[in-house]
Amino acid sequence: MTAQAVHGVADLLDDRSYHIEFNGHLTNHVKHAVIALAGIGAPDSVIRAYHENYCELTPYGFPLEPARASTQVIDARNWRDFLGDRAHFSAYGAFFDGEVAHAGIAGAVEEYAPYLLNGWIGAFTHATIHLGWAIWADHPGMVAESLAYLAFSYVPVRSTAPGVASDDDPIAALVRLSEGWADSAAFRGAVDTVVTDTNSFTDLHPELSRSGLQARVAGVALAGIPELSDTPSWLDALHGTERRDRVRRAVTLLYLAAPGDFVVLHLITSLFALEIVIDKLSTEAADAIYDLYWAGARIIAAAESKIPAARKLRELDGLYPADGTDHSAYATEEFDVIARRAWLEDEEHNPKLVFVLRAWWDEDDWRGYRHAAAQFTSTPDLPASFAEPPTE
Image (cartoon, rainbow, N blue to C red; front, side, top):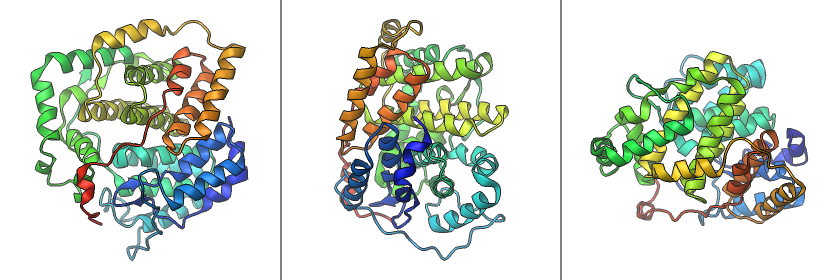
């Protein structure tokens, strides 16, 4: 899969006639779907039909909304001043258009992504996904749009300085997290206190409170709970391909522990996006982003009660050992069928899941990627808070 696949539908990525969100804080995912569908081989006609249908009526039952003008001017002096205010998206877009035009995709990403990705969990990771997809597609306008969305939706991952955890492997770290979740009433209680009263965080934007999910995630992040914010020792123990592969497998096992789970699926697609960003950055910046990813992934899992039993994680780790090969005529054909199934899906998270896991499988033919790719998700029901109109 290469960015060449997107060339026939690149005009759909150029389109800025729609706002980046709709019905308040729901993310406009249509460009993610265009790229993912192209990446898994869907014909241009299928992609264009999907784009048209999604713009008219998303799987949530709402149409996309027109782009919004901004009276604010964003420039090099004030671009940090409005982070997370959920305002001035088009003004941020104009600023980052200029930065990408001046420095190119790699230069703009190197300059701004390390800072903005401190807030990568904002918009439930979709701004981060937007960036990774944009870089993969080599689309300057979408990269600028992505940086603007990161600024618009910024939610800091950490509010306190982290400690250091002793796990030398990401899967071991997940098992320890699960054991702590099961055994420590103080740990669970700290999370429960936040998720049952997100109004206690007065600096959350009101639209996040309307979301429910985004308020819980942002609130848990702001709480600075030690079990969710420490720096893993595997960050220094593992490097390069080994680190990348072990983190991928850990997160995929988390999905196999809850197959089809909408929340955990985002930890896979956002990891892919961050890997694409990391390829544009220095080693030091890459280390920091892996650290932020691991903290954010734990925050999301805890805030949404997606931490499986340690026994289940151990059993899955045994069922899917890292060694051995999965490539065969049968396995390739099965992955191709999974991709064709994804072409038929209204829920765009499914072609994205297949796109990512096929890319990983092509690099490292671990069987877990193929099995996870077939576990499609459903569009979640909106919470009761959506009975109230958007706050913005």
